[in-house]
Length: 370
Image 1 (spheres, rainbow, N blue to C red):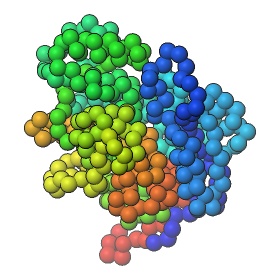
Image 2 (cartoon, rainbow, N blue to C red; image 1 turned 30 degrees about the vertical axis):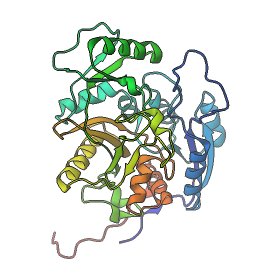
Image 3 (cartoon, rainbow, N blue to C red; image 1 turned 135 degrees about the vertical axis):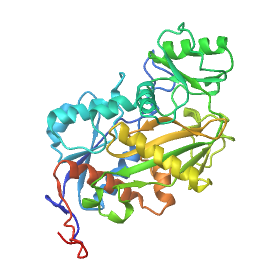
Image 4 (cartoon, rainbow, N blue to C red; image 1 turned 180 degrees about the vertical axis):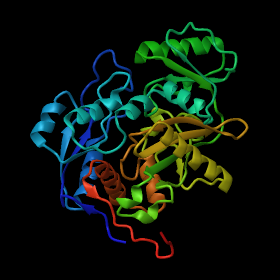
């Protein structure tokens, strides 16, 4: 079987990201954890270094208001997109929409998927309607809406359209009506968006990464990674928050701590679970990915209810890619996949969608007759 060929041997790859600047004070009127999902420049540097190991040149472009002009000046062959966007209810779709308009190839999911996936309520509605297991939930726009009868205390309250544990702390678990109304109003006023209220899930928490497409083997440098359906399920990672700074809550404060630091969650990969639960978690993660039309890579968070049944929490169509830190990178490393190979795989899967790679020539099966 021959190797998939690039139509152009080496590319100019622009890495697009929003960067944290801890030296600058936050603007007035933004939440205390605003910009928590932005990346550090060290992550961008690691991605660039990984891409350059295969001969490509790279450039970093800030995904700010100057992005349209910077793209025209840089004129990249393809963009490696990890940009979170600059605000609004579908901010993760801003950069993909711009790239579509300019007809510039890019990695990862497209506009609609990135617009939907950040909206936790809409995502849950789609999953629920297609019979994926989610906990009972309700969105509050004002705070005085009547609570649906299927929602029983304790409940969990968080922003409906944020990631990286933003708006999640020890007060996210509410035990009565008064606490719930106060927390809803805090979310609505602080984050200027609806609050998502759902049944609190007291069980273990996991995250499951998925990479690939139905035709991934035709373009991958590692076709052996993929199963017959074209997807690779990474090992299940358990997030043990029992000893974290926010016990039993995977909060933004807990996520921001380095692995092994006091108050950080435990990261166990592969998770110590029975084969049947492992199969279920991977099945649900793939279905969650497919039902939102996610492309090439995603990571889905799942938690067990009081009876031990998996319930889907949310999907990240722009999973973090900080080496030795981000969940997807920990899952990849747990099965011996190098960081460089993970990054290049995401790049080449994206490039193949834009006709930048010729498919591998598959040898006919000599045992089959026409």
